[in-house]
Image (tube, rainbow, N blue to C red; front, side, top):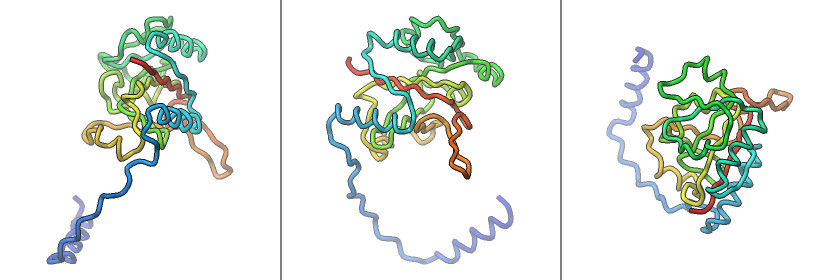
Length: 211
């Protein structure tokens, strides 16, 4: 801690010393504004993901491998990063070269890989946000930031929640959380949108429904 920061914090502590405890904050606000209907939540998630310029697809487990293979081929992805714990069945139909991230790939290898396929921890319908926490099938954060194409599989309804307040209890603050709302993008002062600035240029989201 720097001397300046220590002095500032000491002044703050002195100023609040002896102050009465604040009244408890009421937490009786609504945690969701979406209907309590799994089908409606999935439709809302789909709509908001698309509004953020993600490409959204729906399928069932039996057709997932074929859809993943088709999407990778349409983007010309000849290689794909495979996070630890990703179900092998998801990539069973693709002809892309699989590059397993065990041991971790170096930055140059990741930069030379066309795509990454991951799962997620939770998806938030009201904000169109997908959250990754580095768990099985998601991998470390670099995997979803370096390749130009990120294909993310969301299992519905079990991984879909209505709102951020409902998502937070499912997440562990100590894990490396990555919140994704569409492909990486920014705009300059003229509002010209540029994608792929801090992450993938393209986000493909596959919503898998059914047991």
